[in-house]
Image (cartoon, rainbow, N blue to C red):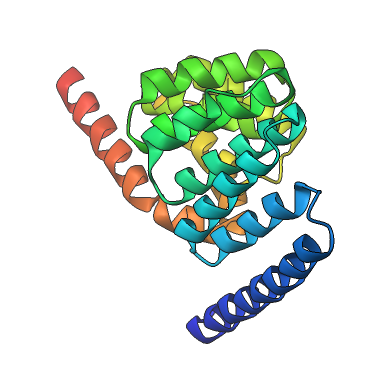
Length: 227
């Protein structure tokens, strides 16, 4: 994708979000007793990087719908997503930690991703595994578990979770690339994983080249020590 096309795509996405904001404001005006438009409007504001407005909207909605447990649950989840998008991970975790059974698995996954973004892979893994217990076939959860195992150097376990993920969706470019890294470290065939990753997700493949070089350098050093 050229820079011109990328810019055009971003502008189109911005225009869609702006139209959604306008429509949702109208919907809230016409149906003030429904909480869903507040949640959806906050999501559209996040897409526009209007985090303060999204936060203010959801805080207002939490007051308006305080007597509706399902609404409160969803709005806390939405507020957690606002803080996560704004990279305020402690506040995000505090919101996700309040969730009950309905969104508990999704909340644990977001807590895991928040810790992961902070570089705390051990804590991220613990929450990701907890999320996985409630949603064992969820591809996003499997990927977060595998990514944290990879970051912690637990290659055998990482391979198992990447294999589960790819069994559900073998067209995941990022997962193919990371599975290739694991295979490389373990001395297994890896070229097919990288080829597939390059075809499916060229951006992720390109960004991963430094990781690839680091692993190749590490493996060369280990071989030299054994000679």
